[in-house]
Length: 163
Image (tube, rainbow, N blue to C red; front, top):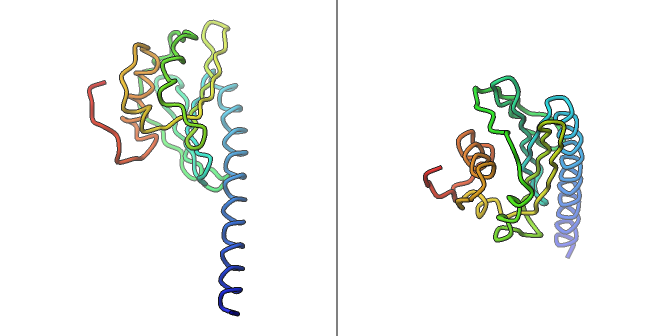
C-alpha cells in the first residue's frame, strides 16, 4: 500500500512539473513572438497545447531566422537563406483551413505587416492535416513548403507531395 501511495505522489509531482513547463513555454513563446513580429514586421509560430517546446520564426533581410524554444527558454537560433513570400494575405485564405481545425492540439499563428496593414491569425489545427493539403492560397502553400523544407515542425507523418 505504501508503494502505491509513493508512486502516486511521484506521478503527481511529475505531472505538475510538466504542466508548469508547458505554461512557461507558452507564455515565453507568446511574448517572444510578439517582440519578434514588432521588430521584423512578421513572425510565425507552431506550438502545442500539450508540449514543452515550440518553434518561432521570422523572415528578415533575405533570411529565415528560426528559434527553438523548450521549457520557456530559447534553446537554439538558426539563420538560413530564404525567399520571403510575404506579399499579400487575403482574409478568405484562412477559410481553407477549416478541414484541419482541431480544438485540442497544435496551434499555428502569424503576425505579418504588409503595406502598413497587419494580418494576425491563430489557428488550433491538426498540424499533420495542415501540412498534407494543397491550398488555393499561395500564402498557405508557401507556409507549408517552408515548414517542411526548414523542418520547423518535426513529424514523420508528412506526405511528400509537390509544393
